[in-house]
Amino acid sequence: MGAPAVSDRPPYLVERNPGYFEYQLPISVKLVVDHHGRVPLLKNERDEWELPGGKLEVGESPEQGACREVAEELTYTDEHGKLGVFGYDEVPDLHMPAPYKATIARWRDLVRSSTLDVSP
Image (cartoon, rainbow, N blue to C red; front, side):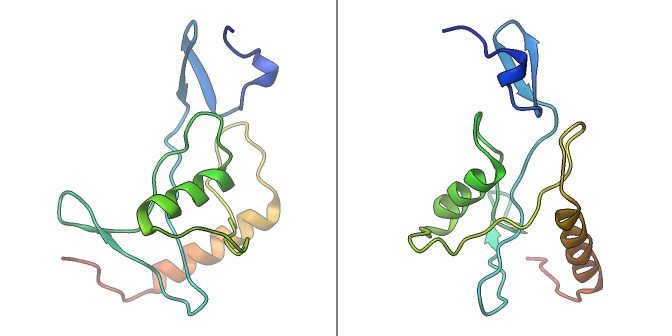
């Protein structure tokens, strides 16, 4: 089978050793909002509140990873196709369309202005 050709490899994977691939940067899903504007918070193993999320698996797109993580952590299935991904952090050499950058900037401003205390 062998390692994928460089042209077939997603740009966020780096071959550290022959046949051994790692993410250039951790990739994580970190925000889910329902149609009422609610954001789910989960307690982690350190008894801290956090947003649902996790890393992409090899070969997954950000959209696929988001759907999988939501299904795993919130037991939600997207049977009606209503789950959407609005953006993701930029990885070096990975193209991100301008609308995604604008959306992320708006969310960052919203989070910075929030008075929500999520301390346990």
